[in-house]
Image (cartoon, rainbow, N blue to C red; front, side, top):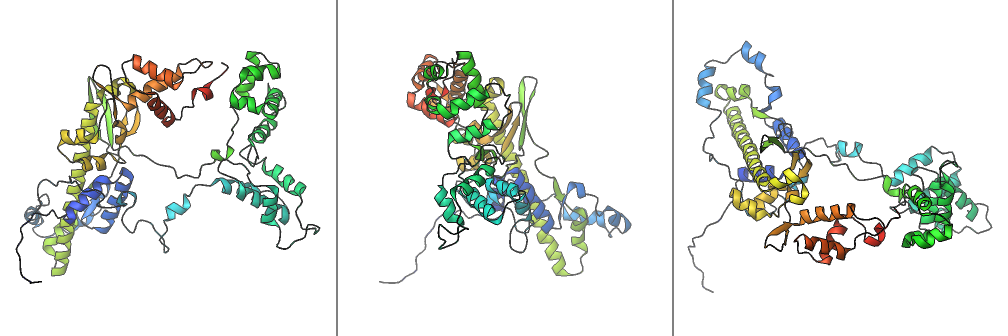
Length: 492
């Protein structure tokens, strides 16, 4: 193979550190952005929060540097040096900073092991931890305490005990222990501990079946509770009829009138068939709206939320020291920090302008939603907003991800206003969000004795000119966690 030199021309886009920073700030949520601003202010002496504005004012007034006004004019803090006037953060590249939206810069409250103190101190209590806390307050022998811990460890996410007594015994008994040994846990001993746990909070925990779970909760009610006796009879003897919603047979077996059975059912519906789900072990999610939408006369006004992030500015005191440093390396350091501070402020400004532009266009398109609600939501995709504001779809995706809008109808993520469409008889389009709202409205107004099937819901939508198939209705209904018609059947 012959070697040689070849000249080839081509174009290549390179991401400058400043552009990378602007894109990263764009995809941060409001809470992550506040942390990013705090970290940057702490690491760059040329930046300060506005509420710290007069931190050096007394010193500056006491000993003003010579020719301070002149030097300030020459320094021109508002200038951008050789930077472009318009910092564009639009790009068609995805995932430039993988995982950056969920984390912040280093040095944000971590200990020597790298664990966040806030994360450890605010860790939510799990279901098992909730039960163990109650167990620690209960005086038991070591053997019974070991049985209780084994039972708690064997509970599933709903709070049910799915392991057998032999499984519990195997988890607590010493190895090679004979059945005639006095330390061998008997069934009645395990059941006694189990009954104790079943009276822990939440009621019905450690049940071995739905019947036992509901019975535990009913038995914990006052004996004078109306319809308690009939409810116990129902869950212990006719739970299969309740599950199949065979109310005619249920009424006949229990010898109750419609009104009486309705009262019994109302009491049972107040119970919790999955007590373990009452104790959530998920981290709470805090939302800070990025934009605020309000009505002014006949128009909707979109504004940035001033509380979503702290205001940052350049520290005049340190900026004025650039011209008066005696050491060249000190001056070079301050100049570099000033340049980074300018880029950071410009990146923040670019983020705010992009966010406001996208949010304003969304409100313009979805004005019907703000006027009339979900049923007036229009179909919308990222490409439509991208074309309207002159940006790439990936940029719109970053802007709308983890960004929230406060409206008179509540707080919504910007992505909420985007949805697919379904054709109508008139040749138009209907948003899938609007279809969900209509289905929810139809189900709420249905006759509880004869709930609407998916076929009937599809027919009613077709009557309104919305072309939708039964399987599509079923998909939307399941997405909204609305039970099937057979499960929605009620006596009243």
